[in-house]
Every structure is written in structure tokens, then in C-alpha cells.
Amino acid sequence: MNINSRIERRASESVGDRVRRRRLELGMTQTQLSSLANVNQGYLSSIEKGKANPRKRTLDALAVALDIPQGVLIGGGQDHDAPQPLETRELPLFGSIPAGPPAQSQQQLEMFPVLRHQWSPDYYCLRLSFDSMEPTLKPGDVVLVHYRADVDPLHVQGRICACLVDGEPTLKRVWVEQRGGQNLVILRGDNPRVEPMLIDETHDFAIQGVVTHLVDRVC
Image 1 (tube, helix red, strand yellow):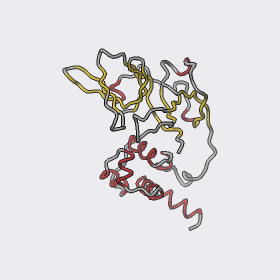
Image 2 (cartoon, rainbow, N blue to C red):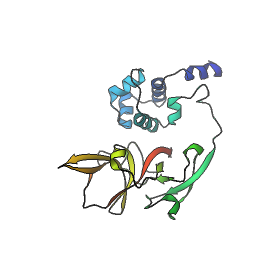
Image 3 (cartoon, rainbow, N blue to C red):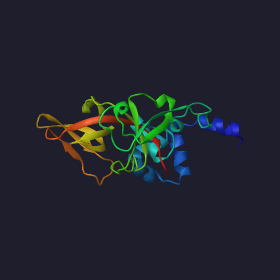
């Protein structure tokens, strides 16, 4: 098959086709991929067969598990798999969750290049040093974080957030449940060995940002 035919074939693939092709390239079973991405196997099977359209959160998880840019899974025309020149800009890279706006914090490790469309003054990069979000995110991963210190936890249900609890940094999914007529914030990691954290009025709690993308992984 010549290069043009291959490009045309890949351009006509569905998201499910690309997920399946990449999974097979990596020698993974559906069971392995569903476990790695924390996606129900039946739902994954439906995606690969074109019977279900993955939600954004599912696409994010699959892209990370398959070690492939999300844009390649979604597709973008005939050239979506072809190498393209990338325009980048630099954002501050932190090794710990900053307690304040990224522009005002002086503890960044260095500057980190991100694609130009991902750059904004209220974004920063964070290099993970903990395993609470395994297998979705791994120690050493660099993620893009949107600084949103005033966000209501109700508005980021299920999102991975950079938080400060009693001054200690933690990266967890934020959930809100009603108990006893009051909203209780619960922080959960994707790592099943990490116990959930219940945040009540006795804790000094603040969301410092919402994780939007994985931007670098050292394999």
C-alpha cells in the first residue's frame, strides 16, 4: 500500500478504528486497555465497534493509556497523522502545586514548552511526583493545569484538580456529595490503594487548578 492510500485509509477511520489499531500496535488486549484507562470493557468494545462515541474524559484516558496525542485519536483530515511543524510557547513548570497564581509564584523549576494554543497566562505545568492518579497519570508526567482558585467544587465534579489541604498539596479527582444536608467534598485518586480524603469544615481546603491535558510523559 502506497503512502497516499495509507493516508486516505487512516483519514476515513473512526475513533473506534484508531483506538483498536493503536491497541493492537501496542499488543494490548481490550481487558488490559480498559483496566489501564479505567474504562468499562463493554463500553470500550462498543467504542471500537463504532457503536458508542467516547466522552471527552474517556478520550483523555484512552489517549494517555495508548500513549498517543488525543488529536490523533480524534482525527483531523488527511494529514492528521502526518508530522507537522509545531509552534510552541513556554509556561512555568512546577514540581509542587503553587499556592497562588503561577505568574506570582517564584518556585517554578523551569519553563516548559507547550503547543501555542495551550498557552495562557493563567495556565502552568506541573511535574508529578506522586502515584495517587495511577494508572491515568504517572510519576514524572507533566500536566497542563488551569489556575482556577475560585472555582466551585460542584463545577469540577470528577475532574483531576491540584488542591491544597491544610497547606499540603495533593492531586485528586474532586467529588461533592450531600451528607446530613451539607455538601461534603471528597478527593479520590485513581490509584485503588489511595484512600479517599473527606474534606469538611475542619480542613483548610482550596482548589488551585484543574488539570486539562497530559503534555509530556517519559516512557
